[in-house]
Image 1 (tube, one colour):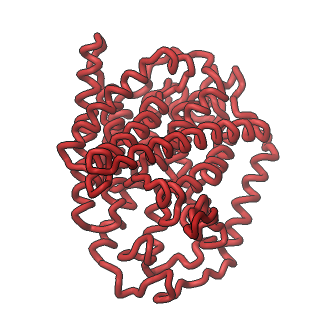
Image 2 (cartoon, helix red, strand yellow):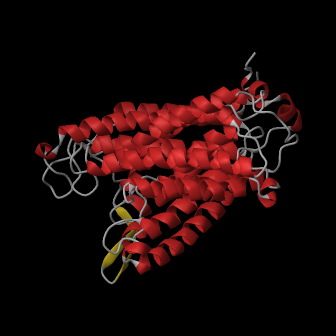
Image 3 (cartoon, helix red, strand yellow):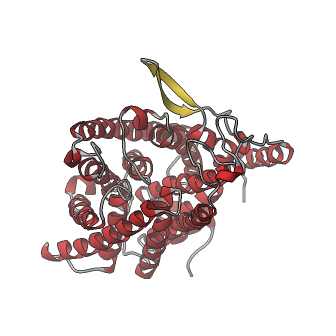
Length: 447
C-alpha cells in the first residue's frame, strides 16, 4: 500500500512529541507561592472520588463508540467506532503538550474597569504539564492534586470531538478527521473551556454562565460543530440503511449513563453533598428523558423502540449536565421531560432531515445543550442565581452567552472544516463510500 506524505508528517509529529517528552525537564510546582497550596490541604476522600470519576469519564468515550457504531450501516461500524475511540489517543497527547495550558493557563484576554477577562489560556503556563504536580491549585481545585484536576479535565476534552463524528459518519476520510479533531480542540474547545471554567474566563466572570459539567463547553460546541460538518461535507450517497447492531447502542447507552456519574458528580471536585446531588439529578433526568421519548414516539404513531429509549436517556443526560449541581432531584424530572420532547421534535423536523446529520448529533447534543443552558438560567438555586430565584439578569446573560457560543462554535467549525478540506480532502470517494469505510479506510470488517 502506498504511504502518502500526510501519514509521514503525522508520524514525524508523534516522533518529535515523544522525543520532546523524553528530554523535557518539568518544573515542579512550589506550594504556598500564591498559586498553589501545601500538601496538607489535600483531602484524601476527594482524591479517591475524583480518581474514580476520572476513570468513569474515560469509559464514556468507548461507550460513545458503541452507541454510534450500532446506529450506522453494517459497512461502517468499525470506522465509526474508531473515530470516537481514537480521540483517547490524539486528544490525550495534545492535552499534555498544550491543551491544558490553553484551557486553564494564565488568562489572555482584555481588561475592563480594572477587571481582567480571559479568552484563552497562556500556552506557556503548563506545557508538557509543567507546574502540574502533587500540590493543589488555590483557585481551581483546592483539595486534590493539580495533576488529578488536569487529568479529570482531559477526559472532557477527549469526548467532545468524538461527539461530533456522528454527524458525518459513513463518508469522511480518517486522516482528515484526525486533522479536524486537532484543530477543533485547539481553536474551539480550549478557548470555550477557558471562558466558561477558568476563574477569570469571560463567560464565567463577566456573564456569570452556569455550566456545572459541560452543557455549554462539551455538548453545545459538539452539536454546532456537528451541524457545520454535515453542511460542509454534504449528504451521503445512500441515506437508507438499517442500524447494524441495536444491542451495541444499548450497551453504549449503559456505558455512557454509568460514566456520566463521573462526568457530572465528579465536577463537584470533591466527595461532598453537591456531588451526591449531581449524582441524583443525573440519573433521574436520564430516566425521565428515556420514558418521555418512547411515550412521545408512541402518541405520534411511532413504535416504542430500543433505539428511542437509548436516545431519550442520552438526551436527558445532556440536558441536566449544566444544571446537575444547581437544581433539585424532582426538578431534574422536568429537565429530562421537556428536553426529550424538544429534541424528538427536532429529530423529525424536515428541515434538519435535509441536512443529513447522520446520527442527529445537533438535534440531541446541540439542542440538549441549549435546553440545558436555558433551563439552568431559569431554575438554578441560590440567591439571585436564576430567573425563579431573584436573578432576572441571569437569564438575559445566558441568552447573550448562548448566542455568542452558538455563533463562535458554528462558524468556527465551518471555517475549520474548510481549512481541513484544503489541506486534506475531507470526503471519501464515491467508490469508497459505496464499499463502506470499514474496508476502504481500514481494511477491516465485521465478518
